[in-house]
Image 1 (cartoon, rainbow, N blue to C red):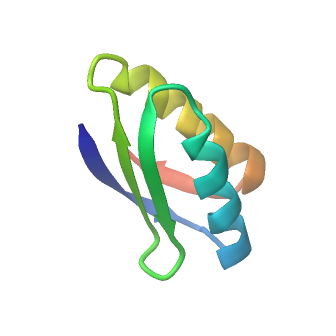
Image 2: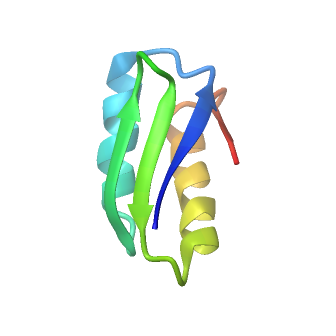
Length: 72
């Protein structure tokens, strides 16, 4: 399943790159792209556990950029 999410308060391109790398390491994630310019996360992951994967994605993003939120 591939979905795109709007991100808010993503402050730097370096943080976006760190988020992208960390999200790609999560089990079940097939691909992830974080765009600093468009403030979007595009995630392709297993459909069966998508909600659990998204919880991990949000937690990972908060760890890297505490002010950043993902519009689910």
